[in-house]
View 1 (spheres, rainbow, N blue to C red):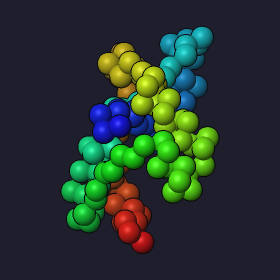
View 2 (cartoon, rainbow, N blue to C red):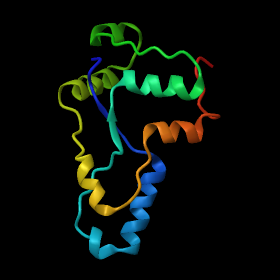
View 3 (cartoon, helix red, strand yellow):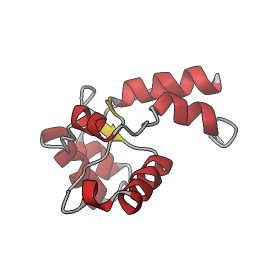
View 4 (cartoon, rainbow, N blue to C red):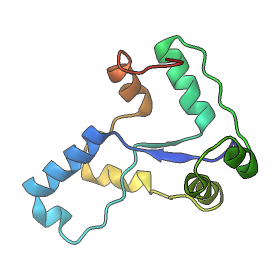
Length: 120
């Protein structure tokens, strides 16, 4: 679905949180911390990638049946259906209390733009 939002977190940010937990265990002990820097639609992701790479990006939604017909593994299709209906709901605002800088998708794309391959 075009309006489905997915939560994004850079791998480097996971490492930042892990290091912070080792450095201040009393602050992180017994915490279940869900991580995301932002929640974006695929259209927003495509727009960011298009701006960063200069390549034309088009986001297309297809039905579950069309996905399976195109050869996408049914388990992946079911996972996407779950994302469309339920999805993860990371409380991104609550992460600000840890005072750790999180990388936006745009910042990540800028950092790795030379490694991003479009239509390759």
